[in-house]
Image 1: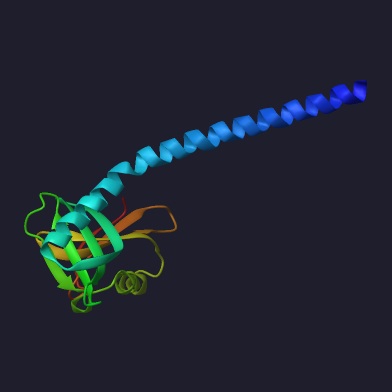
Image 2: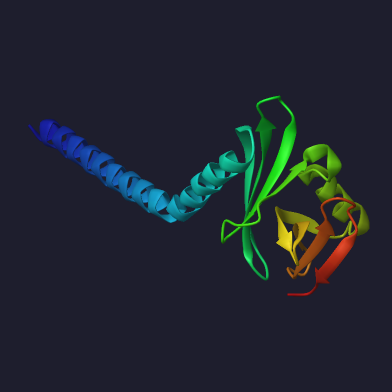
Length: 166
């Protein structure tokens, strides 16, 4: 009889643990979905605007750039399989379209910063508009944990601006 009670207790503990884990998973999923909603909505709106001005067929990357003004950037392919970059100010006006081959890729921008600042670790890269110029913003972190931001011109890779030791 006692063996049966122990077995029932184990089953109840196991069921309780499973229910608890399911609740944690459900609430985590809801939190994740709600927290990424603005990013998904901005991406979808940017794609919709880009498709009005270009023959954008497929989107490979989406960037949300926040400097002096917010802008959204898409990197993808058009209906002729050409790589293009579309940069959209938050207002949705003055959409800029570039051939990817006319500027730096994310990898190339990261590489430029890595070569110039080998002691820093690249955290993030974002493409957008800075003073009406297409620019890559590369965020790095040094060994002491300080953040550094480097703005590189999209077309030539020249450093436009740097903010250090944040």
